[in-house]
Every structure is written in structure tokens, then in C-alpha cells.
Length: 533
Image 1 (spheres, rainbow, N blue to C red):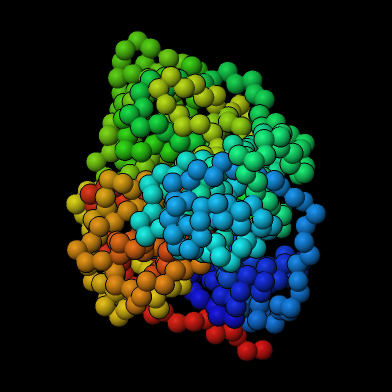
Image 2: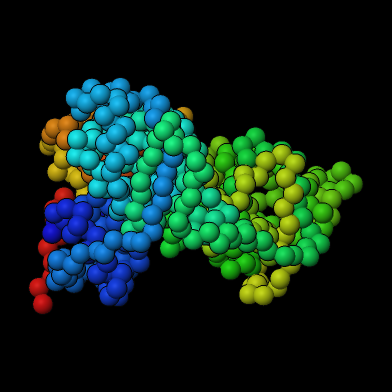
């Protein structure tokens, strides 16, 4: 085993092969290490998040290094059959790469029985192993910006099906009409770790498809309420998003945590109106949002500073301040000006926003398309009426930092790893010495950066997919890094040179387009040495 640093609270365990990885994962699931929060299995690695107040990375490595890796995982009795139209745009390329004919590629793919090794990248995306070795082909050199939902694809030793339209670099050989991710199904992901999978050619077999997996459909959870107060959205240049502290415990289905990007500002918004800190708020990008309230209420705005004006039912206009409780009456129309600094503001109401949680959270995940719908013009949201757990409003909240403005340079501390050793000394030096521009292609998934010089790698080796943490600085073939934010894919296939320290993630979430970023390594890359007993 190798133990590689990811951040101050995350490490990666690298193993010899997938069998060892699954054996270690099974061992840690059966006999957990106290202080471990989450585990993301991948091709040859486990990414493990731990509580630093309970564990050190060295103590965790020592506990893991003693585990038995010889156990074999028994095959599942669950079989999923996937109908495929073998019409993928990369089918000819796969044939050329393997030296097979198109008919032989299809024949070998349908003759294989696969196993779902793990889930990642996107909700419902299962990494399938056990296929014909002749079908092992590299990822595309230039990933597509959008691959259609249902695309059946190959990459390295894996096969998989894209559950929704998303970017990707796998070789597409066909499409399936089956929904891989369906929130009306329990569990929503059709592929679960351990399931067996077979593909069949729709051109040769057209009978109805049967899927031997649990079929008890689950209705989406709906919160009953009798709210007398609601807000109606009158303007939303960019739809607002409902957010909370995040969605946890769903990594087995390929679902990441999402949640508010500036969690300090989010918590402050709730404290200001007297809510528990995890109550759902609206995350508003860049301001310009306006709403009318139907009854009395208390609101607060934190994060990126926006001018706040309130027009009452008689047309009188008053101004209000951020980080202060604001009393509202029926008919009041609140308008937020545009934020000159920062990227995201948080709008909280006393009692919270009454929305139906999805998979245990009210957070909207923009990549996974999980959670409440974006809140646009005309939307009506109910304000919670329960007084349970409410506290007095707070008059002492303050921003934790000054939000950056376009053109300003923001310095972010970085923990080097887990794949710093994939880069040359010049590449490592380039990361910290140059200033990166934040491009307009940035969003909640990640900040896309542009620097004068690409990060130089030692070679063009393919990285088996592995877990990625929020704050990961992933480097695709272009050498221009992407800084992952809360809606990032759970796993990725490009090396991560370093990860932004947890205490700078809120700041990263407030960096606007056209600002600049300079990375400041706070560690030198080195493998974690297990603590001696």
C-alpha cells in the first residue's frame, strides 16, 4: 500500500489492483475505523475522509496497513441486462485501436459478463470490470464537452453507461434506452456495487427487457406544510439554488456532497435569523434577485455584498444591510443589487425554506441534477412555520473575509498531492509561481483556470479513475488546471497535483470570473508514513 496526502482531512490509499481495493473497502465497511467519515472506492485506490480531531493521517494509515487483503468478494446474484444500439460515434475508432472488426467488437462486448466495481463520476455511473481484455482502449485525447445520456462507452479496463448528458472522455460504442438514474426508483442507481451486468444487441434481440433488481418504487419525499407566508420571485437574472450543508452518505451511488460553496456565509445567514445552521437557504449568484413576500417574515443576506432595497405595499423604499436581520411585512418587495465583489450571496428566512429533501438533503447539485429545481422567475417558495429549534436573531454576525473582486489576485493555500509526483519539477514550480485567470467557463462544478504556461507532466500515462475531493486541482491533458468545487464529479481520471486547504474553500467559492488565483503550497509532497505502535 501507498498512503498519499489529498488535503488536511483526506488521504488516498493506493493498492496493487482492483481486487485488493475491493477487499480493503469490504474490510473497512465491516469493521470501521473510528473517525473515518467517508470512503470513495475506485480502480486501485480508496479515498478516505477522516475527522482530524479523532485521527491523524499517520494513525489512520497504521490502522489500515494491518488489514487482510486476501479476502475475495463473492459474486452478487443480481443481474442487470442492458439493451444497446451499437451505433456509437467511436465504434470505428475502437475497432481500429483493437485491430478487430466492428462486428467483433460488438460480439466481444455482448459476450462478456461485467461486475459493477464501484460508482463515481456522476450519480448512477457504474465502473464495470470483467470485460474482454481485447476491448481495453485508452480514453480520448480530447474529452467531449457533452456526451448524451445512455451512451455506452469504454475506457481502459472499464465499460460504463453515462446516466445523463455530461462531459466525458470515454470511447462511445452505443446507446441504451434504459434510465441509469431514476429518483422514483429505490435505489435510484440501476447499477449498484457488486451487481453483474450483461449487454445485448438490440439489432438481434428486441423482446422486452427484464431487470432482476428490486422494483419497489419510492415516491419522492414531500414535506407537508401549512405555511401562511411565501415568497414569489419577481426577477432572477441567474436562477437561485436551494442549498444546505450538503448531501452525505450517498457516495455508493456516485453522488457527491454538493452544498453551499461558502459554508461560513451560509451558516451566518441562518444564525442571523435565528435558524439552526443547516436550514435550507437560497444561494444567489451575482445578485439581481427580487421577490415579493406574502406575509410577515424575517430575512438576512450574507456572502457576496449586494445592495438591498425594500419597497413596501404603499411604494415606500428603504435600504437594508447584509449580515443583519431584516423584518418584512406582507406585500414587501425585496430587490438585491448586483454584487461588485464575490460570487455568491445567501438569503435566509426565519423558519427556513420549505422544500422537499432529495436523498436526505435540500442541496441542489448542478452536475448530478439532484435536489430542488433552480429557483427562477415566477417561482413560489413557502417559508417554514415551525418554531422548533429557533433561536433569537443575531446582531453580531460579520463576514469571515472580504470577498474578492474581478481583477484581484486571490492566494489559496494548497496541500500537495496525491499525484504531485506525476509532474516535473518545472510543473510543480509553475503551479505556485504563475498567476491564473478565472475563466467564464467556471461554475459550481469547478473553476476553470488559464495560465501563461501549462503544468508540465513527466509523461502521458493514463491514471485509473480515483476519488477527488472538493478543492482538488485536477490537470487535464491541456495542462491548464481545474479547481473542483462542491458539485465536482466523485471520481476523475486526470491527475490531481494538489488540493486547496479546507479553510480556504469558502474563499474559493467566492472568487468571481476575471479574478486571478495564485496557489501557495503549504506542504511538500511526500507519502504518509504509518505511525508505529
